[in-house]
Image 1 (cartoon, each protein chain N blue to C red):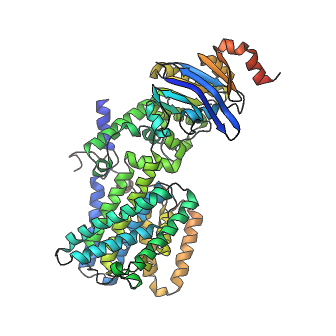
Image 2 (image 1 turned 90 degrees about the vertical axis):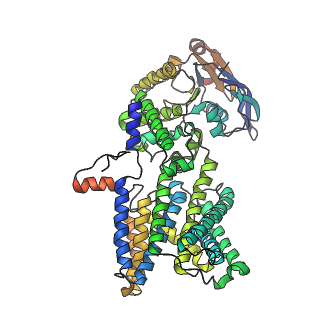
Length: 252
Length: 339
């Protein structure tokens, strides 16, 4: 069964069809790229998948569950988690707490447990600490756990955002331009990280990216959209030679 | 892994023995001063007013400092709490002889009504942001004042409510404040408190990691309102007379100023600012009108040099302070080895 199954997805903003009959199916532990020129509707698709926008028509199934009518925070519980094009961290909180917030829904203690300082509260907090630290270690961030998120260098902030998305225990990770603003060396490092995610956490990844080297280098399949419509899909080698894609990027 | 969890669990931030000792010492000193008559009745009443302000400012800090919402009607919840507690106490005065029990029962009522009011106003208001929310809470505050004024049969209207049993003593006020501040502190250090903080930091990101932001905004607001009810209750029992005008817009602003000055997001900042800003104008009475000049100047100076407030978002950490002073400090441990 596909982790993410999208059919006939469309959204209109007034008279503008921002996304038109989009469809995609992401299998377990698959890495799919979503590319397209500026303004093609890539981020809009992410916002539809995560419940920020309600689609005009079409359906989105996540782990077999229809996401229709679910709020963004409920869709996270169904198994998708995202990062943002312009990093959105909890800037004035410690690196560790950034992750612990994402772990929120996997803890169960209530209000009274916290104000009474019960054993359950302490145990769950300790486990959350341990999970967060383990996750930070994967990204080589454990040395920064008590730093405020805003004090991290740019590349590490990106990594922290991915780590935070993983802390919700998703089955699919939606990465919105993770390499934006990175230098070639940082991009290289990011590619390694994404590969590692796939092998270590066994999750599916849907990736929006402009950096062609990264997309062509790691994606197994690529979907290309322009003006909200799918213009091509296939393996990286096929996409590279596709005349429609070349036309969309470079013009006639 | 198992061993690690045990270690982290022990080091967890929480009330440690040393905190209890320091609070107890402060209490013993103040209580001795009050009970031996070393300070006059005026000063001991002032101390209770400071304690009320500590409750008001730390609770407003939950809504404003931690949740990040502009809330300009906090005094209204204090008023709701004060009136509820007073009316219950007047009604039950003959039935319950013990002042402390009477206080507990009335305060429980105050918490409920203030909390319900918080829920009713919070649900629609928290859809708004920033200054719009500020104006709505401000309007709500004035509404409560008007309703209290017009419910003449129950509240004696604009003339105010007389004959409230003056059951407030310094120990009751002190320990209630300690309990309230501790509860807020523990709450803010839980997953629920972190969820509230994350909303202040970035609502969209918060939602994207699975936090139900509507629920937690409302939770923060209701918690703040409930404790404001406690503040109102102590206030009423210590003064013995309350009028609708006591809980007007100016009172809300006064509490707000203290939260901002102490540092939005710092409970200890709110405590320090409450002590300074309530006690100072009273203690400067010798300077007559000049004290207002001094007060305002101080506000301007603090805002110029410490725009983040006295404490910023930091907390005053007693164990760490001891370490600095005495150079020795043992990691707080969970069982037995404290002594």
